Length: 182
Image (tube, rainbow, N blue to C red; front, side, top):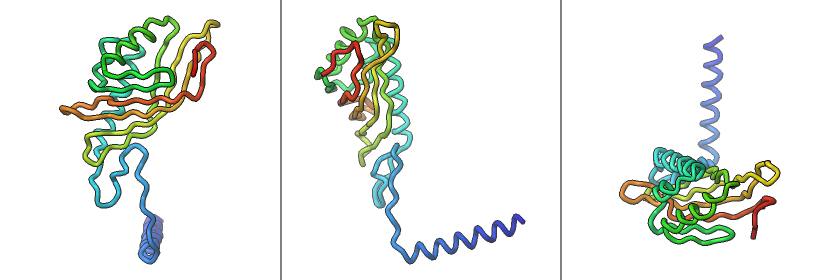
């Protein structure tokens, strides 16, 4: 029985190879978690680099949840620019100070979660674009948990062997009851 199954699979494989040789093949689409640089004739992106950026994103989320004002700058490039619906912060220290003075002082603040959908690496492996969804969670006056949410894009840069966030842009698509939304 096993040899018959193998023979049928071999015939199917041979037949599909013959068909593929006669018809033009569609270009494969790169997986969402790696760069479009996988197109034929370009360098393969490093899955380790993508995994490292994902790891750093999770660690950054955790630092914000812990209200770790001293740890926030470790994830940011010195010339970081953060754009949200309500403010623009320029510089690593300005971004960290904004969290320390606003969210970390708000007893209702729980966390900001950035959920990565895709990461694309540049062909030289020195920059990356991360896109995903975000949500800010806060305890509401009635005790429930709600918050704002939307989509984001982050630009990462690799300097001195370390990945850091260079730009972040947030678009708010849902506004919670207690928040002042623009």
